[in-house]
Image (cartoon, rainbow, N blue to C red; front, side):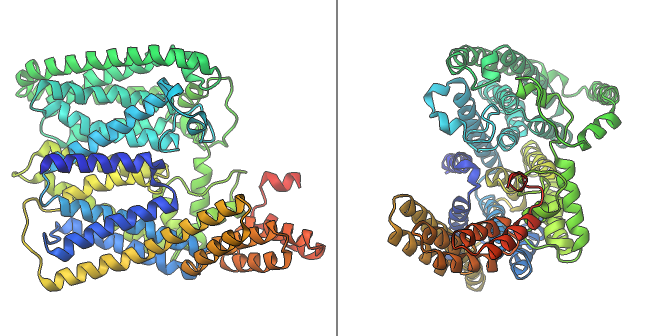
Length: 617
């Protein structure tokens, strides 16, 4: 049973990442239906009852509040469609947390952590394979991101991929330090050089930071510090050697400039990486078996070495001139000099526009401190009020974006989620009945995710959020509690699950019909395209996407009056989307209504004044 659980957790983790990070609305909605349908079956059959820690219930209340505020904000948000989409996202992530807590009642936490590690490691290997053996993959698959040089496959976003892989570090160190077999300990430690290589090819400073944070948190939380420290030093040394080795294969670094050379170098780099991992595995197996047991009682020596590490870190930090680095972080992003984008970016202090993104979020919060601008409103706010010319959908900070979009109430709900997770982790770490190192690894994984959410949009990249929330959710359930729920409780739980399934199913079906409409329009079948778009409109009457698609199909058929009617309906559902006004201007121009076209174009420019399009128009 536990072996099957490990495979299920690993498979779900892998698939969530492989499906482009479960970022697309249709993927997210399908995952939401699957998660809550599973919860419905478990609760309705009464196999177990949802028995959470006090912190777990606090987190569930936080998720419920976030979902409720997000849905309610559809009344004042610029786009009801985006607000409902955000509601679905919160419902999905809350479902992952609840399902993890349910599973913790009959799946040992050790196996839960193993499943997460195996799933992440598999994705990490796949990502590296796409770079080292690029001939095995379609070129357009690897270059789907805006910058093909930075490794992003299969999640589609380089920082997201690196952070996803980095969440494996505390989970891998836990096995490397406490695994029962030397071979298992060695293989777990060998994952860490692979993680570092992914972060290097992704040119992700965030990935390296999250990996370091996870390792430090595990060391601080666990009771097997000598074992963790020794495994961490060996694996960390292997990571440094791996990155230094990859630096020498220039065609891989500047991929895909010279495809033939990158294929040749990829084979050489793969052989070197395998050799490094084997050395790390062997060294970890030997050292953790022979050296660690002798050092476990050397408490004073450990304290001295930890103090030396802290002082050394402080000296390095001071040598980096933190004030100067802070000022560089705030500066407007500029072009990357030279051809080595990966290393130039890694060694820079630029915030890549994050300071500007965060400032805009703070401004939106100040404009609407109580209720925020509405779920999904940041994109429109940035387009109109942002300080630099860039398309930005997310504020690159969960906390600032929540404040901007949902105001104080949303922040309070998010705080409940974080506080509940921390409370559950603290309880698990204090328990005398459970493996503290496993609890520490899961807590460190959750903490690393919370850190990543402060500077990147990993909350929206569902695969990354799944790992962090699944880790904390496993700490929120009470292991060994298998008492059947009462009939009343089962009915209430099933009803809640069914209510949460319905909107996600509607969004999934509507998106599927929109895709059908687009495919039919591309094939020249206007009747089928119109029929599919009308179905989407009936399923999602609050959305602007179905009438927009109907307008585009009518325009394709030169039915301009009908197209203008549909685009007016789309604008009525999202008056702050400058792209809708731009399409309206195009339709009005084709219809010969120049005055109306000028008004629509002016409105589009007002909503996105820094767009390069309007500088060229």
